Length: 280
Image (cartoon, rainbow, N blue to C red; front, side):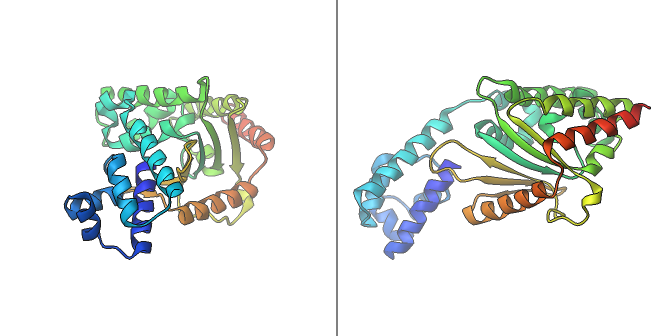
């Protein structure tokens, strides 16, 4: 995210200066491809290259300093190696998991499933059995182990803060049967006691709501200059929104659906009542 933020800033500076990518490449004694890669944020950036471009674009010293600092933080972040790098079972999710690990907080809207960071092992196994693409029990257990590693952030010394709004449908869906689902709902109630976890339920009786388009997560970061990132996982593709305007739109959507939901206290009471209804 930091690299793409820096690349976007370089692009804006070039356009404002009326320069072409070819002119930028000439200043770097490189090909236009290098400028394209820098502006997309796909490569780490060296201070001499940033200095050369900023001189071409005639920006002041304060802007140059800010760009260098952003580049330094980006380089430092790229060097970090996480446990997920050696996990073959998460190859398809490595970008999201690494992004989640860097996040300071997450706002998440879920319609049909319990949020992944809240799922019990039994709930994950039930999803695996239902998903025909997970045809190997070892594969399912690998997914369970990965999910538990991700959940450890909720209990870390510097924990991940998560505010989840869950539609009532996710609570009513009997994933794995009544016993599995009851334990899952009880687990939600337990997690709600953590100071870094905020859970709200949007009940059916709330009627129409603004988030009918599907679930999404808004990931926020501590680094200066890092914009919020919105993540949507669909049946056919994964969508990332890293534009500040789009991030603001989704933040507004989340605020509206949270405002239509039960309070955290009433949500826990509601979840507990659904759980008791499964065991009675």
